[in-house]
Image 1 (cartoon, rainbow, N blue to C red):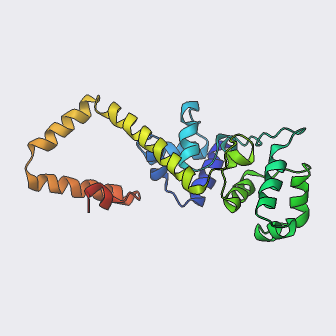
Image 2: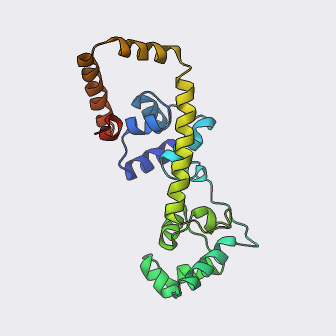
Image 3: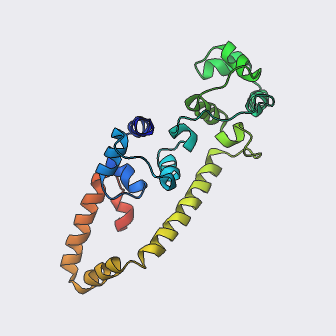
Amino acid sequence: MIGEKIKQRREELEMSQMQLAIKTGYTSRSSINKIELGVNDVPRKKLSLFAEALKVNIDYLLEIDIPMDIEDNIFKIKLKELREKKDISQYKLAADLHLSQSTIGNWEAGKREPNFKTLKCIADYFDVSIDYLLGRDSKIMTKNEMQQRFNYELSEKFAHEYANLLEDKHFIDTVKLYNAINSNLRAMCLSYIAAILGNIGVDTNKILGY
């Protein structure tokens, strides 16, 4: 059940329900709680937000096996190429990943496939993306490049959300009200907002410019 997968992954990341709610566009933790309990389903349009917030792919959330072509298993080719490029044996790779040599051998022979959790460990070990391992991206992307792409996509998303916010009449009225109060009340408001954000793990120092 997708709710169980979401709860399991959220707890692995030590993320609160409120933090996940904010990352996925909900206004309260109860929305996440109902999803995790199976009371509500995740709307299809929000699946990508959950996958991004939980740092997994949608297939993982839906418990769909990661697709690999049985006749032309791209993963086995990529794995062997990366291992040989790193100039390590199957035994060395197995030891580093806390697996057996036969497991690595079966992967490279195309007889077995790793689960998503193991696939992520392999990607981290070779400093590439999961998409590269599965042949969805022909370019080897380092962690730094992946972070840069993530930051760019996050900036684009923020700009889009902020533009929508500026069209919200309630938000505009709130800004006007904030501008109308004196500096002491503004400071009180900021402190209150900072306290709320701090409780959900937001770095308020960056927001307040400290």
